[in-house]
Structure formats: structure tokens, C-alpha cells
Image (cartoon, rainbow, N blue to C red):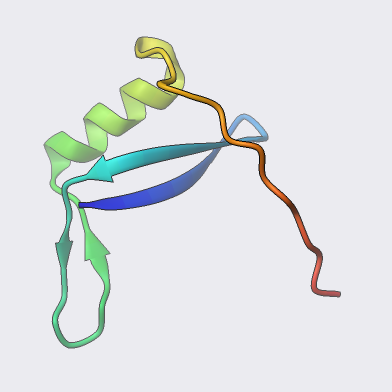
Length: 61
């Protein structure tokens, strides 16, 4: 299970506890088609957020 931040219409959203396969050699995460579609539907309005997180933002410029 992983957590991932997505940017949707200029807004960042956090999705927690996403089932993922993680490569033991390189650490790359992959999601099944079904998981990807469910996350897409969730962040585009088919689910209510379970909470709100305040986030500090730093620019490394």
C-alpha cells in the first residue's frame, strides 16, 4: 500500500492506501488498471475526501 499526491485541475490531492506492486530492484511503483481507474474516479469527484491536510510548500530555486 502506498500514498501518492496527484495534481488535478491545478489542485493537489493525496490518495492514501493505494494497492501497488513495487519493483524489488528499482523501487518503481505500478498500479493495476482497475486501481488506476478507481483512483481517477475518486479524484474527479466520485468520492468525498476523508480529510484535509495542511501542507508547507518550499521552492528549491
